[in-house]
Image (tube, rainbow over all chains, first blue to last red; front, top):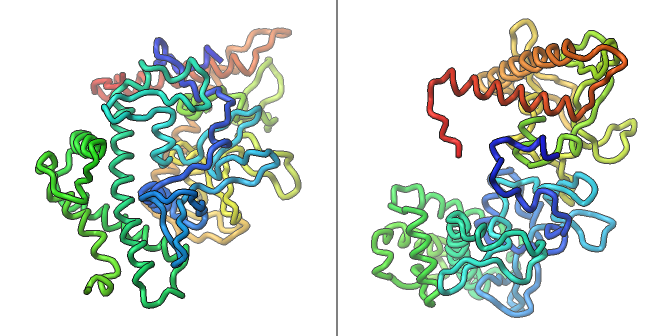
Length: 260
Length: 175
């Protein structure tokens, strides 16, 4: 195999995932945010219910959405494929035999997959998580310390902050709707797709947003307990137009319930 | 094969197989002089039955919907499908799908014609490489292996890419 590798890769460390058989794509329930779902849905022209499943939360988080008035909350996760194995593979897993496989939606894979096995600490330090399936020698500090890991982690933090906003607006709707019998999981998915269509419009509407710098700033604020979507922050002044536009997206839904 | 192998960091053996083909096939690879000719085919998942078997890169959702896992990496013939050219005219392989019939109105004339021309160009380039490989086979009883053919194919692709870069006069910005 060595001779068949790309000569351009000479001197670069091999991708540890290429021959790994630790089965992270089987082991985990891959919970995602609305942006991840929208990227996959719009990129592959799939209905969200074709690849997402709701997962009941044990403890309510800002990403837990309700479907009825029971107070039970759920997260969305990628579905699992049918398999004889105890741990089922991700629905998008392409098995190539002998435990080897590849992601079938690699360019569209969720943020959690893009950033695995790294995490970013409140201090801003990017480290390899210590609870992962990867071999000990894989993804050392010299790998996850590269700028693209930090950028992906910050982007994911920002997307989860926006998602929390989307979820909060939906949960408010669940509590206030005059037609609770119309609430459903499909309704939630439909709302999410419209929500992120409008977020995409906000990003494409000429609002200044230098992604790397803005996500870094946004992420640092989140680490200090502030969300730019909840309050105006001077650190985000350069991107205030975009932040304001994203904030307004949520208020564009279920407007009749906002009167009081 | 080279493109997929490199992009996915996969040895060719894990996703392609050799399938015997006609003696006059332009893409027929030999491993010994006057030996059988083989085509490269993407592997199938599971046993191939009368109804066929899925491509190894196909994923399937729980509702039965299936899609190619290679995305933009998929072979040119898959990208161009169901379009084909007959006497220079674009046409659709109307009855090749089991789920629906295609017609020429389903096609994007510009994009599909471009894809088909790319298929033809790549097929021609591959045929030339295969001719060179077959012509350089050692006299019997010596044989060449599939691994050696892969190395040859990788080197041929490198040579082509180097020519492309040189021909464009552009700067190679790859790391």
